[in-house]
Amino acid sequence: MPELGKKVPKLQGVTGDGSTLKLDSLKGQWVVVYFYPKDSTPGCTNEAKDFRDLYPKFKKRHAEILGVSRDSVKSHANFASKQELPFPLVSDPDETWCKTFDVIHEKVLYGKRYLGVVRSTFLIDPDGKLAAEWRGVKVPGHAQAVLDAIPTR
Image (cartoon, rainbow, N blue to C red; front, top):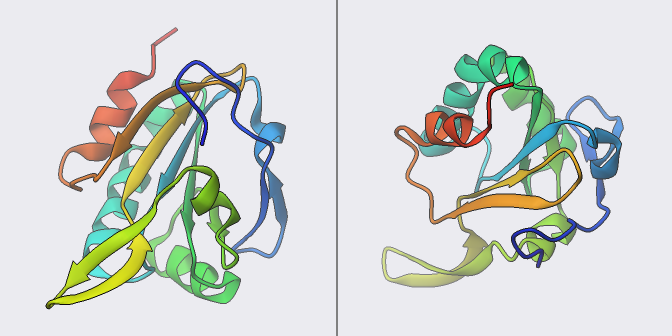
């Protein structure tokens, strides 16, 4: 797992449009990587919409946003299209990204224990180093808090 101030490992994944995205190809700008449990569920939809609505402000701060979940490329394509998301969603079915950032933990739902993605966000600086992290995220106000963590030029 990357530590604050340290370089983030090289990762790549397939996005909802079927293209391969390499994390290190985004060097030179801020990168927000947010992990969420499942496409088209209420909390995840609200989080995606919040990042979508603030996307122009993120771009003004030279920041790109990546959403990551274990959903399929097709599921991401449908979700991104329905919610009009202007940023890529990375499909992580083998959990490479999730394990790298240590976001899969035991959760409890209706008394049942299972391993799931804990809603988390990571901010990577233009040099490819981890600048900030948020774990166990509550959706309301979160996208704005991430935006506020990116310096204005």
